[in-house]
Image (cartoon, rainbow, N blue to C red; front, side, top):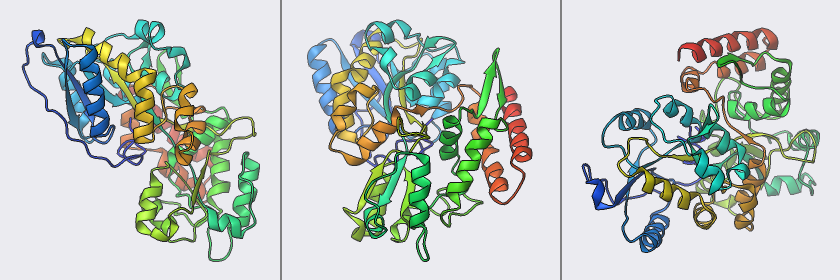
Length: 417
C-alpha cells in the first residue's frame, strides 16, 4: 500500500514524473530483455538511466525495459499480469499490497535470496514484515517513507522553545505553549487514522489481531483505547476538523497560512507548503514523532515499496538478480540520495545525513510498522470504519462503545473482503 500516505506514501515525498523505455509485449525470452514495472514518481529518470547503464554493462546479455504505471488502479493490472502468460519479470508494489498478491499463489518465494544475499534480517520492519506471508518472503524492501513532525521555526522561537520534544509529555507541553489566541499549537485533522495507528502501536495495541489465520478488529482493546485517548488530547490543541481527514482541507494549505506551529506529515509536504507561502522557505524544521520515552521515537506507519517477482515470468531468475541489485547497498544509497527516501536498512540511514527532513524520517522509520498483513485489509480501507470511529470519540461519544462497533466492522471485512 502506498502511504496511502499520498496516493501512496511516496507521492508526497516526490512529485517527479517519469518516462520509461516502454514495454515490448511478446518479447521472446531468448532476447535477454528483463521487464520491470515501476510506479510513476518512485524513481527519477536520471536514477533509472544510471542503473540501466551500470547494470547492462555488468550483465552484457541483459537489456532492461522499465514500464511505468500510475498507482491508481494498479491492483487489478498486477493481478491480471500474475495470472497471465506475459507477466513482467519484476514488479514494484506497495509494501502492504504483498499479501493480496501472494494470495494468488503466483509469486516467487524469495526467502533464500533475502537471507543469503540481501541481509534481510536487518531490513526495516515496516517494509520487511508485510512482504512476508506465512513465513515466506515474497516482497523485497525497496524504499520507505513515513510521517514526521513539520514545525514552524519562527513560532517555536517566539514561544521561547529552544529544545525539540523527545517524549510525548514534552510534546504535549510544548504544543500547549504554542496553542495561543490566533495560533494553533498543532493542526491535526480528526480522521488522520495513520497517525492514530502509531499511537495505538506505541501503547502495545493493534488495529486488528490474527489468531490461527483468523483476523479480528482490535480497536476496543485497552491499549488501543489509550492510543485514541492520546490522539484526542493532541488533536484538541489546535482547530483541526473532527469530521474530516488531513486532505479536507489539505493540511499543507492550512499550515502555509503561517499560524500553525506543527503538522504531522511526510517531509515532502514542505515543498507544497513553500509553494503556497514562499515566505516560509527556510523556516520549516522536522523532528521524529516523539515516543513515550526519549529512548526511542514514536511508532509510525511505514509506506513505501517492495519488489516482487512473478512465478510465471519468462526471465524470473534474471528478474531476481535485478531485484538484488536494486535492493543492495550501492543502489539503495543512490536512490535514497536522489529521491530523499529512507533506505531499506537502518544502518544505511547515514547516507541521508545532512537532509534534515529525510534524516528525521529515517529516525522514525526504526519504529515503523505496517497495517495488518491480511489480503483483505484493502477492503477495510475502502470502507474505512476507523475514520467515523475517531470522529465519534472526538465529538464526545463513549470510546469503548464506538471502538467495539468499529472493530466489529473491521472483523467482518477481514472475513469476506
